[in-house]
Image 1 (cartoon, helix red, strand yellow):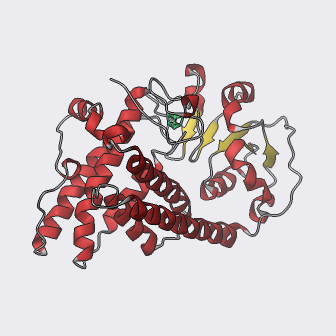
Image 2 (image 1 turned 60 degrees about the horizontal axis):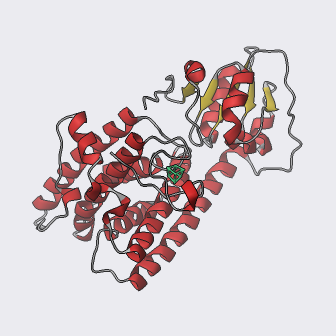
Length: 336
Ligand code: SF4
């Protein structure tokens, strides 16, 4: 088994992680993430044919958003969860095929990503380790780079859109673009110029996603203000919260106020200190620690529960894992 990932600035030697991610991502998880993207491409290809025939697929929209988001850097190292999302993708893909065929649209000469299937977790892992699923499956380096640039843009877009979704905001045009663009990354007829144009279009939709999230955040919690953030600690029991999901931040503050439990942000959640709505909570103390990459040391010294709402997480030490929770209310399930 081997891996190849060059999706972020942390990448080994500036060229690609090939043994283990600098971010901590294992070879197993990396290959499963590639297979998830491969599966989403298969969904996109068949869904796009249906969309062009006037159909709509709400379940594809959410699948795309979730699946793309969970493959961004430092977001999800849980192979079991990724396998479940791949299975969901295969089920959705086959259901889309039924609808598209019923509409009279022919599904011919489909790429393997729209055809492959697997009955067991072992078969899924075997498929994930197959080179044809990898980023390197596209041999022409220019085409590969442009395709991957588009996919990384879609991943970032999905992350913004997911956070906005959690605050009740969606954009049908964004969903449609995610499907159309992902399907286009399989289209061998596209020239480099056409892929450059699609890359720029990806940037345009990325800005739209950021604007949607900004409106959702400021609409719910007010405009961020220049704020002096307390970096000291009190003697009460405390919970540390990281990630970017402000809805989760609100819920944690709601559920802890008046209980004698204090709340501190870490790393990615630092900006929550700037929102007027959160300043009203007496038990919101400030920020603990430093940047995300100091998690291992700082989670040890914090010595209390840690809530991860979204990215960026570093694979934690085994002795801390029982103190780290996700917003699904579960202990962190990192199995690789
Ligand atoms: S996401 Fe992880 S594995 Fe991929 S390039 Fe970045 S550091 Fe390497």
